[in-house]
Image 1 (cartoon, rainbow, N blue to C red):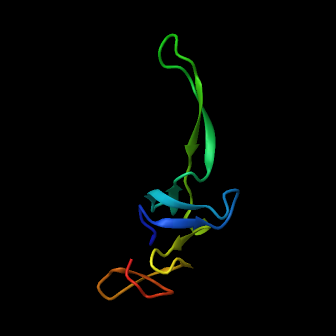
Image 2 (image 1 turned 180 degrees about the horizontal axis):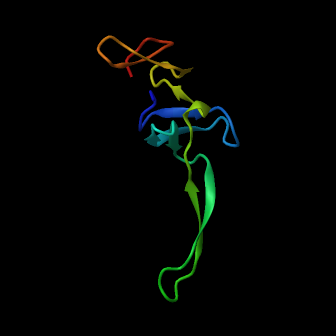
Length: 98
């Protein structure tokens, strides 16, 4: 998987289409990404201690890597990622090292 933790991506499909966000974590075996503020779901948390109230918390869930596209920090365009001869990642549009 060519997208890594900390990369800026744009969501192409789904309810969060068009959102720009940072990748928090990658799951290479599932080809999925955990993206900040995307694919939020509400989880009901039960109280842990006596006298404490339960809560409804929004949690971000992974999305398939095919549903996002890399946003190049140099040219600012949506692009694919290639590799140079010295195994460094390169933007396919502007040929700059990432």
